[in-house]
Amino acid sequence: MTDIYFRTDGNSEIATGHLVRCLAIARACVKMGADVKFIVSDEESLTLLEERFATHREFAAFCLKRSYLELNSEIPALLSCLASDMPAENDRPAGDGSHASHSRPWLFIDSYSATTSYFIALRHYFKTAYLDDLRCFDCAVDLVVNYDTSEDCAAYANAGRKLLGIQYTPLREQFLSPACQVRRKAEHVLLSTGGTDPYRVAEGLLQIVYDNLTDGLCAPPQNTDHRTVQDMSLSDVSSQQLSTQDRSVLQSMHYHVLTSRANTRYEALTALAQTHPFLHIHTNVSNVAALMASCDLAVSAGGTTLCELCAVGIPTVSYLMAENQRVAVETYAKESLIPCAGDIRPLAAAGHTGQPADASAASACPSTLRHIIAFLIRMANDHPARAAVSAAMRNYLDGTGARQIAEALMAEHPCP
Image (tube, rainbow, N blue to C red; front, side):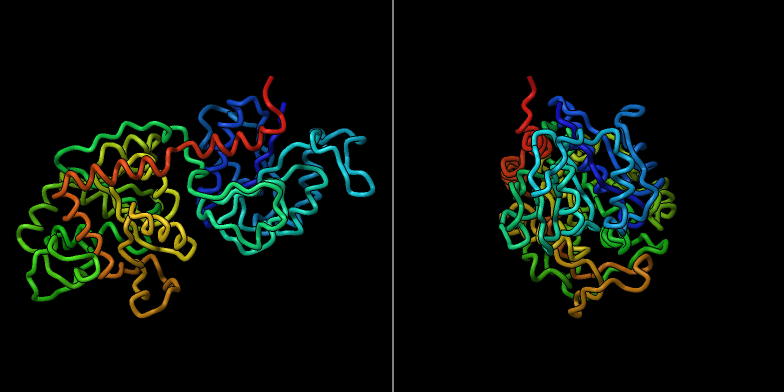
């Protein structure tokens, strides 16, 4: 049997994306006969991991009680913690550095705190795999995975095997074959703005659609041009006022905000939804694929959510919220699958990409909001375009990434 340890973390600072994608791969590995365990830094990571188990104690998990920022210093604790699971002494590396690779378990690492020295130290005891999206240092591992890019680079020169490209996105099983129907009339819009929505994108968009929403919502930019938005491209609509026709199209739809209670505006949005039937707030959604499939259009920040929307086939417009989203956002735009409305950070218009000191109080870049609105109006009125892009999205990403990664981990140990 193949033994696989997943070394990852999640907390209030780095969110839970690392945990979620490792769980997707782990479940695929279990289906192929692997024995899977998790290793985390601290109690917070352990709690968040166990909250995401499909069943009670779905996986065994070890807590190192160390800082998630200092992986190098955890190596003695990690080896001590797993001593009973380590290979027999005669299977350990020989003095010349050689070893019996078939006897070593896998250590699958998903952490931005990993380093080249960490990989090298642990390769004596494990076959190592690394899920990367930074491409900024030597990934000296047996297997490297990067689903944000298909381009090889110097950072992967010492990697044994490389799985590069969007097809290796480790989505949850629910995204393998979601029910997607391109309805004749667009009636539901998903606003996936991240768990905290620091730039208040949902509020900014709703304020533009419903200019009578004045309960602390972002005010739209004012101007005097009354050209129809659907007659403009995404590049020149940024300062245009909505026509009556455009506003009617937007106000005919329902808006589904996918967020969390960590959103500083959660209470305000919830209160607004209680008095406005067009607004729906979704938190702790177990079947996100079903929620996506129930919508006709989507607005999303960059990140794995774009991959999920692609697998479901929901016509989407993206926006940039952090620099580590840039490659993925630009890749989807280049493939003519998900256009990018621009950088949502208010300083971006002035050529700055840093986050404001108080991001929670920041308003979204008005021009980017207008680009998003233009997309919604244009696609709501064009059923053939929505059908075409939906098919293209699903052809581009089929949701089997977790299974393909699991197959690579199991390759040397095929199930009997």
